[in-house]
Length: 484
Ligand code: P53
Image (cartoon, rainbow, N blue to C red; front, top):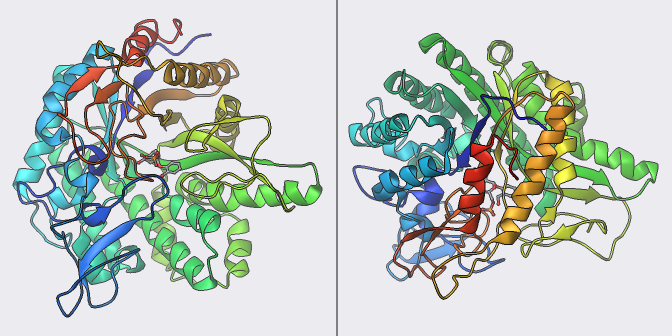
């Protein structure tokens, strides 16, 4: 089985989960900086000062309160693995593995601390220039996510974030600033990480009411327009620029052959997966959008010029994350999957990780083949990996055979899809270096090929140690996917 000669092998991270240095060089606060997340299944807690000056914690910041860092709380993302100060060492390790591509994101509030300024923060721009120049030295192609679970807190507090149409303009100015500043250094971009999460997690985890759906679909619409305008700007600023969408790719199966389950499963695909990809790849809302909006009495602010923007700003390729599959049923089931969010029914044919994510490489092949013929665009798997606890041996090594086994099976699934004609151009494994989990805030849910000595309570030396998977992936890349 053969991978293309110019296949982009690499790894992926996100600014908020690896950089740390949350308050240096003029950076503005973000929601993640005031989020405390401890052990598994703990709910997200943001901290704030209420109007009367007393501290509080909750799911979100109540009206009249302001996000604040409280002295007695621990915030894992504030330091994370301190990539901000250690990027040279980390990129050297990526180069040692033979990376052709490194997917990373930019922290919006380093560039625009509040988000609505005209002038960018030069120190923030300089940091990423240094990162890109280091990557260039090693001939590693950057793939840059413009927005990865990250925006200036000020925009959320002042404008209500993506509920407000003005966000389109702020995002456009931010994206244009990046395309201009890094012209010639970066040519691969992603507009929004896992854009479909807004709607997917609403459907998965909450007993959401119509008002929640109204907000979610409206936020998505503004993001679609912002993304489409950014695609057009990227192309206008540099003809070499290529821009992708990024979808959280969870393959869904009907649990039974009851036609009601099969239909339900189709609806899950439409709402959770296709809705965003169809708009971003095809430049218009699909037929079933009306059914979805009607179901939840959604009435959207969509203008004619929005629709023109969507048409003119379709993406150049389709990228997605893939970790697991799920099973859908209309029947009562006793075996459900918990993890850090409800993933529906338990699939009796699959094994689950400690966080109850289904290990399903065939689901990746299925997903690739489906999207290849839906969009006829080049595809990239920009996240895939196994979150697992790692243990150091007495001689300071990490024998992560479970991770190697997971990655091997998923790379084999990609090879099969390529063999079947799928145009897959790259693979960046998630959390190529250990970092803070997005879902749980844990360090102990590790994905890395490089171990980082940092623990859930913030202790540790931050030392980097290559795991067995590091040397294995090095061989995979050197043999272009032959030596698995
Ligand atoms: P963590 C849920 C399901 C699939 C992908 O996730 C997800 C999530 C969020 O929890 O997010 C992506 O760290 C995301 C990354 C994230 C990674 O998957 O919860 O793009 O930022 O770290 C893994 O185990």
